[in-house]
Amino acid sequence: MVKLLVCDVDGTLLPYGKAALPTDIADALLSAAEKGITLAIASGRAYTDLSELFSPLGSKRDDIYFISHDGALTVHHGKVLFHQAISMDAIRRFVQLYRDCPTLALYSAENCYLLKGNSKFVKGNSTPISNLFDIKEQIYKVAAYDDALTPMQEPTFPITGLRLCSKSPGCIEYVTSLASKGTAVSDLQMRLFMNKLDTAAIGNYLNDVKMLKNAKYSAAMASSPEEVKASALCTVDNAADFIKWCITQTGK
Figure 1: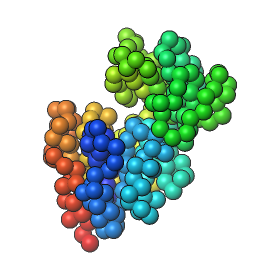
Figure 2: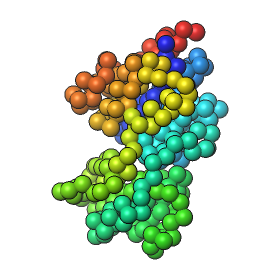
Figure 3: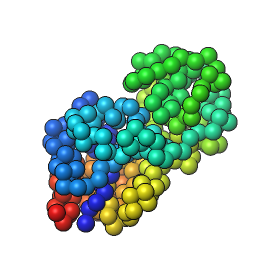
Figure 4: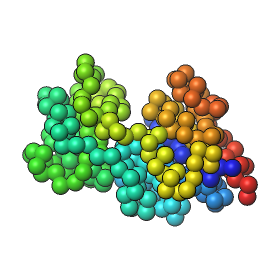
């Protein structure tokens, strides 16, 4: 029986290149919520960005558990339930390594601190700062952006305390090495007095593997890498189809 449904966003619920949640996805999520399924959204995006993206769900959005920053922060009803913050030492190492990058961004729960550069890469609130002592909140993700959108260079050695969570042309992002979607889902299951047998999950990329393994019912998008497909019970072309199937497993 499916009691908890965990969904990745980009490339799963939201096709790449799209800015708004597809109608069939929103309708399927609403139907799942109405059937009593608890919804959790797990993404590399910031919490405020996710909250806005799922506004088409109306009042049901408030009941969603948002696992943001690639598992570093879980928020429900605006309250932080679980977090894995980056240490200041790790932040300093990141800043030193990417000191020549045009834009450096440090993300808290609801804000983004710009150590240098501009805010065109940032959605939502941003606060320019002159040094790290200006930060008054815990940081959950750090990112380096290149205005010229040239390929970002990954260091030849790991940054102690950090895990590379996203890399694309003009962007490289890190969270604490302790954070993952799988860990955040495990924490949420315990909070809800649920377990793997109650859980369904869908994703499309390598950072979703641990999350998929924490669910009895799991699906990977057909476009996923082979390692992701191997971690799931099935593959689908449209996430809405999997969500609708989950609804049939509620027993209600």
